[in-house]
Each structure stands twice: as C-alpha cells, then as structure tokens.
Image (cartoon, rainbow, N blue to C red; front, top):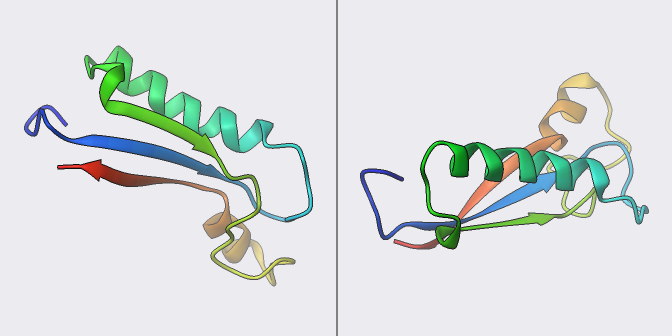
Length: 83
C-alpha cells in the first residue's frame, strides 16, 4: 500500500462452522485487527474499509468435512476497491 498511494481496499472477515448466526463479532474483530494494523503501520484510514461477513460466504460448504476446510473458511480477504 505504501508503493501504491492510490490503492483503496476493503478488509473482509469470515468465520467457519455455521452460516445461520447473527454473531458477526469474531469475523468483525478479525477484519478490524487487520484494519488497525494497517493504520498503525502508517496507512491512511481513508484508504481502508472493513466488513464482517460471519459465515455467510464460506469457501467450503458448511458443515465442513475436516479441519483444513474449517481453516479455509476462517479467513480475512482483501478486496481492491481502487487502484
């Protein structure tokens, strides 16, 4: 982000194990931790957004079949909004 000062991103938090939940707390905290890290590293917060998806966008169908699939569903993704 330092080498491309026009880059704007959205940090997206996800969780595993269940889709039907109003509890986006864990995925939100996951995305917020990355957001705060980037701000502390000198990235202007105007270039950053973060969003919690909970278990609504799994990579693997829920319930997952093994720990590898659960780990893949527990993630943070970066969406480039502007280059």
